[in-house]
Amino acid sequence: MYDLLKSIAENNDWVFEYGREDFLNLNNNMEPNKIYLFVQPIEIDSRFSDAGIESQTYNVKLMLVIPSNLSETYQFRYENYIKPLLDDSKKLIIDGINCNNLDIQFLKTIEVINYFDFNADGLIINLSAK
Image (cartoon, rainbow, N blue to C red; front, side):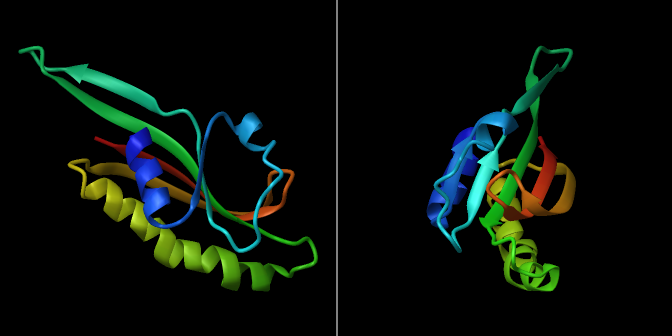
């Protein structure tokens, strides 16, 4: 899943960062108007059939954000940062996962404003894929 998400980011010219949320918050060299895909450590649940065949479910929390400016209004941020991420970038992630023999079982999206110390706006996405 790590390699897949990194590949999606690279194919779309996004910045990819992997780590715990407290470490991701330390990022202070963000480029304006650049999309960042922050992925927290991936949880893998394994289940085994009676025949011993393993199936895995990946539980992923990621953040898809764009640096913002404190002086921008919420409406501006929604129209220019959040809405394009909701309409386009989120779909690229979903399609990328579904096209790699994984099925998304659960998906939850939360809009965020002024997230992290460096003021990023965008989405937090929690998903499970099998």
